[in-house]
Structures are given as structure tokens and as C-alpha cells.
Length: 632
Image (cartoon, rainbow, N blue to C red; front, side, top):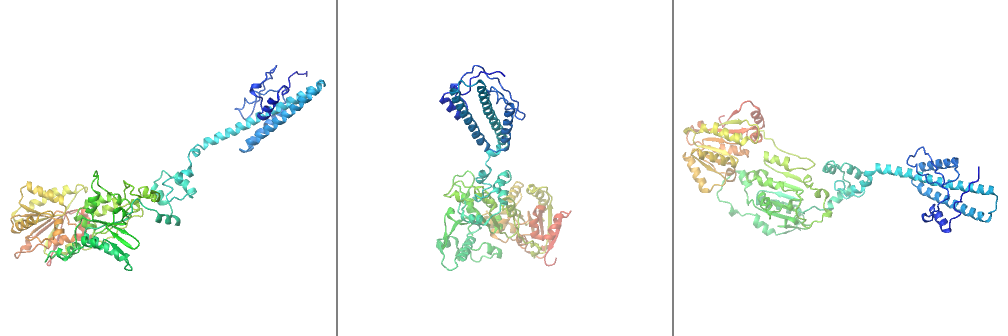
């Protein structure tokens, strides 16, 4: 090989350029020198990395040592594959050491070259070859470092692509602030929070129910508040019942006769009664005396606040623990939709609802009960000074209805009362119904010898029942009683709307009749009773609510038509026992007709008994006859 004349790398560099080369591993771009002869380009083929083909294009080397270079590259490649993320910093430090050693060697060579300019040509060539090898080694280390960094970068990109959702979705932290998963504010839930987040598409209330409470959670529940203070709502029909409820509360709380009751005198004056209020010589049945005893005003509401050693009556609803009210009293404050003065936020946190004597509300106005239930446990429109940081999470989530306990007490079962359970009771623990099935009906209490004809209506749906009953009555029943021998007929109608419909029809047909309802004046009642007794009016329309509130004895009855089975079973025997013979042999002409359908199963059971009611509903015959009396 001939001698190659090449300017030594680093021999013409200034001290500043040498420091830059030592620190950065490359020459300063503003001081690059153009060599007289460009070094040939070196192309390196790498087996496993196609993206790194350009890494060796800028290598400037005079003598190529392929064996050492390949060995160095393979060594660096193995290190980059085996080491973790800390290998980057180690590679950089190795790179700086190599550059530093190379620079020091170049400085020493420069000094020796200046002192020994007249050395032999062979020694100079050996020094040049060694410098070239060192430069190639430095360049190869730089190339290997770039390969290792590229491989680490590629692996990082793959990991980033696979964990894209994890980078932008903080499962743990987001679960901490999730209302569905963070129910009691426990920050140390661990893996349960991640599971709750993953199952966020399930029913949140179901997740809430599946959460097991610990002792700390139970203690937390007792310390937090609700949106409003009122927790118990007791619905009673009359003021007398409210008086009894308050007296029971006082007796339970006043253990040592140290309980202070505020506004007690005012409460007794407004809710109590005096013997002078009762009409003299008024004789009524026992059930009437039990229901209408005392103050029977049905428009009232009162708040009761329970303190440690005192009870405050007439407390504002938003400061009361217990609210005692009638359906009408609540309806006048809830009012209708669109009224600006309506208010029902105090019902948002009711946890115990007690509906006492529910059967009496059927005689008052059942719509008031339905209207009340629709406005229970709704989100309040105003904060009312509540500290929301202490409100239960399920209360903020509008789940209060799932925790409300509803207690309904009634003298009997009725479809409208049963509808409360299916439409307005959502307690997650379920429902319990306790009822007494009557084995013998009230028909057994009829003392008069009387034939009872039960005629069944076949209808496809409950919605069609009122129309089907009306059509059957005017086409099949009424024509039989239009004759003169069928006068003195009393038509018992439980529902007021059916009463109005039938009254309007008889007026259009110009039928001679009288009518009595709960809204009739006393003079109208006396006149109708007199005309019916004398036979001047062959028909008398008689409503159930009038009989419930008045219990008047109607004289002159010879024929009975029950347009529908009565709500109270004893009303059936009461009406039948009103028949009183004026002359001997009148019993032979008495009749009683009852209309019923399969949707009246509960009412029919209370009248004829459970066994007979089942046979009458399932029988292929639509007409059934019963005869009562001493001689039957």
C-alpha cells in the first residue's frame, strides 16, 4: 500500500473547537473545514433494523476495519436489547468517555507530531492508521448508540400505542370521584374501584345494592344528612286521629315526665273536641261511632320537631322530623302543576311513610293520595340551607324512593290500594302483604228472607268495564223494573261518576225518579225520602258515600239493585236489612239484583266468601241465586 496523504483529524483544530468536540462529540458547525479529498461513503447493511440504514452515511474514515466495527455493532445491539430504560443513560456516558479518550489521544498525537516532524515515514503512517482506527471506532460507537436509541424508541412507541386508553383514562383516580362507585367517600377501595369503573355501564343502583357495608360505612350513614330534615310522614283521615298519634308519641318519649311539649294547649284546642259538638240522640252503628268519633275535620297538617328533652308542635316543615297531615291538607300545599306557590320539597327526604285507615280515603278522594305519592322523594328545587357535603350519595342520585319504607293499613284489600304497592313502592328489600281472607261473606248477616240474584258481566279489559256495566244495566236490568209492580226500587251506586252518568240518562229518558248523594242538601234528602216512601218516585238513586257519612235508614224499599258491589262488605247487609215489610206477605215480592265481573273478585269475596266467589267467577253460568232469611 502506498502512502496516503491526508490531513490529520484534529491537527488543525483550535482549543475552542477541541473543547466543543470533547463536550458534544462533534465539531462546531460554524468551524467545519472542507477537506481536500472527501472520504469515500461507507454503506453498512444491518440484518435486523431496516430503519437505521442511514446511520452510517456521514462516517468519515480513511481506513475501514470491518471486523472490529461489526463486532462493536453487534455488542451494542445485544446490550440495547437486554437492558431496560436505564441503558440509555449508560450508553450516553459510554459515548462521552469514548469521545473524551479519542480527543485526548488526538491532542497527544498533535504534540508528538509537532515535536517529531522529521520522524520516519513509517512511524507517521502507523500513527495515521491508529488515528483512523480510533475515529472509525468512535463513529461506530456513535452509530451503535443511535441504533440502540432507535430500538428503544420503537419499543416505547409500541407500548404507547397499546396503552393509549390507559394514558388518557385514569382508572383509579376517576373511580375515586365517581358517584356510582364512591358511595360512602372511602378513599381506600383498591381494586374494587377499578371493577366499579369497568362495570359503569351496568345499573348504578344495582351496583350500589351489591356493595357490602362495613362498620365504618354504617357509622358514616348515621352522621350524614338528607336534603331536608323531615323523615317521617303520617297520613291520617281526621284531626281526631292526629290527636291520638301525638298523644302516643308523647307517651313514648315522656318516660320520666320531664318532656316539654311546646304549643300543647293550642294543639288540644284545634284538634280536640267537646261533647257539645255531637248531636243529641244520634243513633248510629258501631263502625260509624268508631270512625267519626271526635273532631272529624279532614283539612289539616302539622309539623313535629323532636329534641332531646322537648317536643315542638307546629314546627315548620323544613325544621320538623315528623309531619302529620291529611290527604286534603297536603294537596292544598302541593297544589297543581304550574302554580307558583306550590311547595313539596319537604317531601324529598321522607324515609318512612305511614298511610293509616287507607279504606277511608276511598270515601274521601283517592286522587289526593295518588297526587301525594307522585311528589314523594323528588329532587328539591331549592337547597333550603342544606350542607350538600354531608348528604348521602344515594340521596343525591335520586335513589331515596328505593330506601323509603311504606306502611299501609286498611280494613280490607282493594285494587286501588294494591296499586300503591305496584306503582309507588320501590323499596329494594321487597314487599310484604298481610291480609285476612274472609271465609264467610257479609251476605250471611242478612236477616231478611230475600232472594239474591248475581249476574256476571263478561268484559275483556278493566278499561271497558264502566261502559259494559252501563250498557248491560240500561238494556237488560232497567226494562224489567219499568213496570208498575216493580216500584219502590233503590239503586245502590258506589262510584259518583256512575251516579252522574245514570242520573243524566234517566233525565233524558224522562223516568220518574229521585236521587240522593253526599252533596245533596238536607231539604233535598228529606223530600226524596218522602216521595220514595209514598211511591210517588218509583226509583231512588243512592250513592255509597252518602251512606258512609250519613247512615240514614231508607224506608219503603221493596226491590234492590246493586249497580256494583259495595266497597265495605257490611254495607251490603246494611242495605238489605233496610227492607221492612209493611203488610203481611210483602216478603214474597222482594228482589235483589247484583252486577259483578271478574275484576270485582275481592269485593265479591267479602260478600259471599272466598270459596263461593271462586266458583262464581270460574263458572260457565253467568247467573247465580242465593236466598237468605230465617226460613231459608
